[in-house]
Amino acid sequence: MAAVIESQHLKQAALPGRYVAGAALHRAGAVSDVEPGYGGTCGVVTVTDGTAYEVWIGVRHRLLVAECDCPDAEPEAATDQRLASVARDRAAAPQLCAHGVALGLAALDRQLSWAPAPRTDAETVDPSAALNSLTPSEKARVLDALLDSNPELLERVYKLAVQALDLPGSARHARGHSSGGELRENTAAAVRQALLGLDIDDMRTGYRPGHGYTDECEAARRLVDAALEPFLADLTRRLGLGLTSAAHALASGILDGLRACEGSYDGDQVLCYAGEDLEEDYGYGVRDRLRTAGVPLPSGD
Ligand SMILES: [Zn+2]
Image (tube, rainbow, N blue to C red):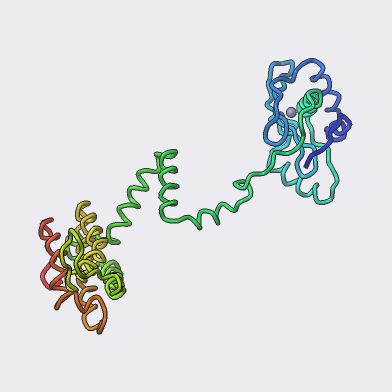
């Protein structure tokens, strides 16, 4: 909103007696560093005892207002609240302190624009909606930025990171005997879904230059290996961190998932070509990783 502001508006908006005091300050050259900012005008008003007030003046809710840290100016929250109600009944209560008046007169001298700065999209967006709409990788960048500027949060975030990968309450369980039920069940369900969801149209069979001849079984095995790879990578990651209980639960879940596929497919599905016994054929890599890490699955799992 562009507004034509004249000295009479400053007079109307000033607290009793402050227009005269402000005009005197202005005449005495008390106002310096006048420049446009924050949709209005910023400046410094230095009074006779040497106190320098940083002042802003501008138009808000159709009212001429100033911000100043002198005793005359009200706390901003209260001012905003009052402005909102004032704006509703369109009655302008005087608010300007002498410093606001002085800066306003200096701004008039310099013919600075009173137009509020255009609001950016970032000022109007709902921040909580923005946070909720972030993708995981965007959330990760937000976390990185937060930790960069608030390193004191690191210790708490470290703990949360461990909690995210460990089993709940695994410290209370003897090593290798943690329940891990939820992780195990979720993993089994995810493995089963990944394998039964393999598409036979993705099987690449036949001769390819540089690769030789690929039969159905080999093509199917490649697809199964690729589908299991993220689970094995997760297993390696948790083993590397020493989260043995979680690794055991994850490994058991992968084996459960392989087992659960048996009898669930028929006809023209990738798993028909992937082997006789899925747990036997593909569980080996799981058990092998645990053995290599020195924490083999307890027998019976
Ligand atoms: Zn003031």
